[in-house]
Amino acid sequence: MATITLSPIADYSVGLNYQYPEDSGSHYAKILSADDASSYVANKWASGWKYDIFKLPVFALGTINSVSIYIRGFCGTSDCSFQPGFFNLKTQAYAWGTGRNSTSYTTYSDTWTTNPFTGAAWTLTDLAQICLVVGAYNPNSSWTTTITQMYVVIDYTAYGASYETLIPNGAGAYTQIDSQEGSGSHYQLVDDDINYSDEDSTDVWTRSTSYLVDTYALSDISSSSILHIKAVIVHFRIRGTSGSSGASGKPALYTNSGLYYGTEQTGFLWDTILGNAGYLTCAHVWTTNPATGLEWTKAEIQALQAGIAIKAESGNRTVRVTAVSVTVCYTVDQAPATPSAPSGNAVGAPTVSYSFSTSTTDPESDTVTYTFDWGDGNQSTIGPYASGASASASHGWSTLGTYTVKVMATDALGATSGWSSTATIVIAAPGSYARVVGLW
Ligand SMILES: [Ca+2]
Ligand SMILES: [Ca+2]
Ligand SMILES: [Ca+2]
Image 1 (cartoon, rainbow, N blue to C red):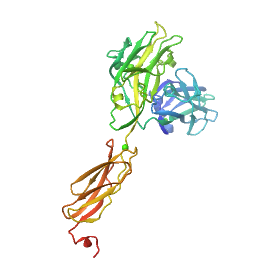
Image 2: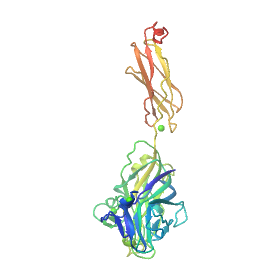
Image 3: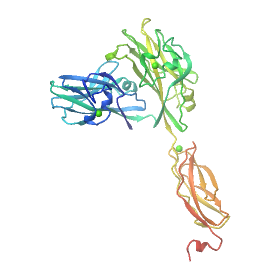
């Protein structure tokens, strides 16, 4: 289990009538920190409820255990109230948390273990299609209700501890979508940051009532220490136009010379929700490669194409996609633990070989090789050995002196430990051992 905090990234709809500082900036920027009276939004001297709605960034890191909203605010009098909640962009419904009426700045939280709009487990698409909302109520125009901070905490089970976002960067095997907004190749119209997409400025679109599909080449994954690829998540941002049943879309992958679709999403209308353009973001997760049914390989990811298939409700309606984004979640190889200090003789004679032993373990139980540094400019690498097995190497020193011996471990994927603590061996002339070891 892990948690991540998501803070608002933009205003979606501004209804609260006051912000401090009294600039023309965005309301969401006033609720990013718990700085109380230094920055806040408020219902100031207006009776009744007023609402702000804020966009959240997409989440693609794991399966969702719960979603909590944290809110910090205060009421001018305990007859005032402030209340956090979610606004569902697709249904335009609200789901409210608990009303609060503290008369000093106080932080509260509400937690939803299931999606309040469906009663079912949270999905990535659910989260991508809700906004954060706050209501502030005054019983009459004498009072002010203030909110200084809001954020969401997602408790999730990670697909993998690491992730990278890949964006369209070239044409793929399919370019069927027949119209575009903006100039350039299709992939250039949908390579937007999924959180800050340019909506109708650049998109691919069609009036076709049968599915047309585009797939796009993707930027490469950069990590060189991928151990297991745990999930490939495609987000796409789509809107229809006014109509009755709405447009449809489904994410597409092209891999291993085959085309594969994610879950069909339907009912995209235009709506101009609260004055916005009506784009909605959808997500689909592939935990294995649909072509093989097996764990994704890095080579498959480097060759992967992602895109969308879309169709309009009717021939005089359109469907548009403005952004496609791919998140790859993976685990990385972890280095072996630093080996134990070499164990061996403390004294010895020139040119005679002495054995030193060590061991370590690897977090993934990978085999390990050991590199001994003998302190005289020479090193020896031995192995591979099973994780946890004892390993020993021998070395002879030709010149009298005191030498420090240390060892490091390298696992099968090349991850290296630090150097161990050192052992010391004194190479002395025969007959002087007793003096060396302090016996007289
Ligand atoms: Ca604040
Ligand atoms: Ca775009
Ligand atoms: Ca390892």
